Length: 147
Image 1 (tube, rainbow, N blue to C red):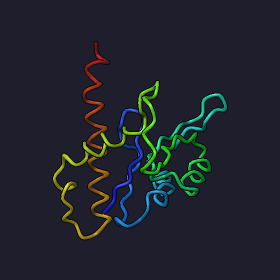
Image 2 (cartoon, one colour; image 1 turned 120 degrees about the horizontal axis):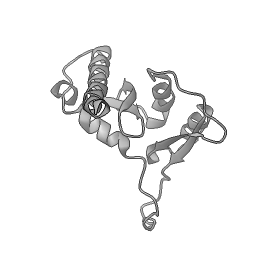
Image 3 (cartoon, rainbow, N blue to C red; image 1 turned 60 degrees about the vertical axis):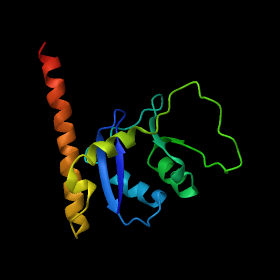
Image 4 (tube, one colour; image 1 turned 60 degrees about the horizontal axis):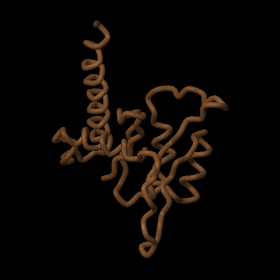
């Protein structure tokens, strides 16, 4: 089972999709973008919306899907094993925010170990966990707003 998440800049989930483990990441990209629960704001010409993806999406399908969805793509390039890694970049990495969200989700045992036979039930648990993550965020934010 593969979980595909779309998160905002701080790692809070916006969309979740489940699929079989043998489905390539670039084929899940369009479905994940379409599964957003909120209506996405129109991007302005001066302020494009960015989408950071890992090397699994460095395919023609991944690039095409990202551009068709009106995102500015930041896709890590695939590199051969014999090529050395690039030098330290002058900016921090942006694409691993989703890993934090994945680790937050697996704190719930029913998501870490899948006992449900139906994928719809498992997706429902993931969506409930995502809603609880947003609830935790707003509960920790609320005391700051009062003062």
